[in-house]
Picture 1 (cartoon, rainbow, N blue to C red):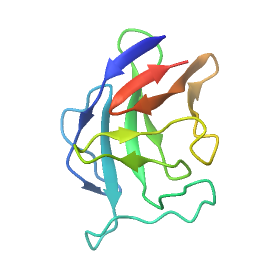
Picture 2: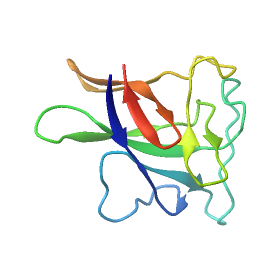
Picture 3: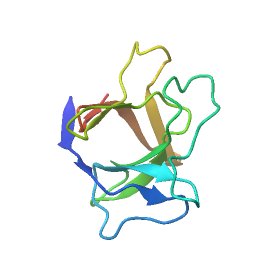
Picture 4: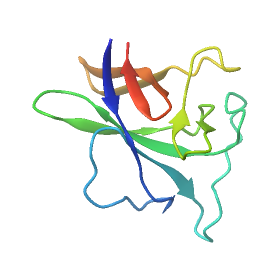
Length: 114
């Protein structure tokens, strides 16, 4: 299993992105008024929305995973987990093009590729 240490970025207004994104970066999505954006997906048991940068493609390529439908658990140290068996399927699958996918989980801020 391939793992990548992620880093917590500042909470960010929906539609904006933090500067100098790197694989493993994650941040909470805020509404225009600065409050955490809420999710109404039944599969999201925490109601919070996050973005995650995952490795995809060749030569250091990356893509943005939208975690609005996932249960994201935020820990006291600021890391997050998106784990199997956490009340929903919680597997993260990102497809950019045919044959370019990333599939995995996040455990305390560490990406785990399946």
